[in-house]
Length: 268
Image (cartoon, rainbow, N blue to C red):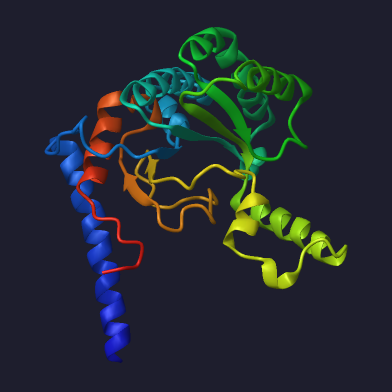
C-alpha cells in the first residue's frame, strides 16, 4: 500500500470518527450554544425522517409529514430569534416524485397549508420567503401559493426563508451549464470569462450566499443531491433525531458545534 493511500484512508477514518463523536456529544448535550458567539449566517437543513417517525407510531406517512411541517414553524422562529440571516429547508427533491401518488399529492398541498396559517406571522417577523428549485413540474395550486407568498414578503428585510422544492443538485448544475453554453453560443459571454461567480449566478440559488452550516436529521450521513455546488466548504452536522422530533434545542446544539470549529477554507 502506498503512503498516500494509507494516509488517505486514515484521514477518512478520522473524519468518520469525528462525525460519530459529534453525534455522541449531541446525545450528551455537552456543548452549550453561545448567543454572543458566531452565528452561521446561512443554515441549510435536510429535513429527513418524517416517514420513519410515523412508522414508529403506526401512523400513515402523511402524519409524519404534517408533524414535520409543524416542526418547521418552531425552527423558523428559533432561527429568526437568534439572528440567522438565511434558512434553507430541503422540502421536496426531484427524486421524491417517485413516491406513491397519494403521498406526493399531500406533500404538494403542504406549502398551501403552511402558508395559510403562518404567512401573517412571517410578514410580522419581517421574514422574506423564496422558493428554490424548478417550478416546471409543480401543480398550479402549489406554485400560486408560493408565488403569492414571495410577492407578499418581497420587501421584507429580515430572515430569508428558502424552501427548496422540486430541487435537485445535478439538475440545477445541468441547467446552469446549459444557460451558460447558450450565452457563449450567442456571443454574449466569452468562455474565458466563466468563473465561479458566473456559474453561481445561473444556479437556482442565484445571489444567495453558500450555507455556512448544513444540518441533516434521521441518522443518514449523506447530502442526497442537495446543493452540490454550494456545499463545497459548508460545515456539516448529522443527528439521529428524526425531523418531527428536532427541536430548537437541537438547532442550538448544531450551532454550538459549529462555533467550536475552525473554518480555514483550505488554508493552514
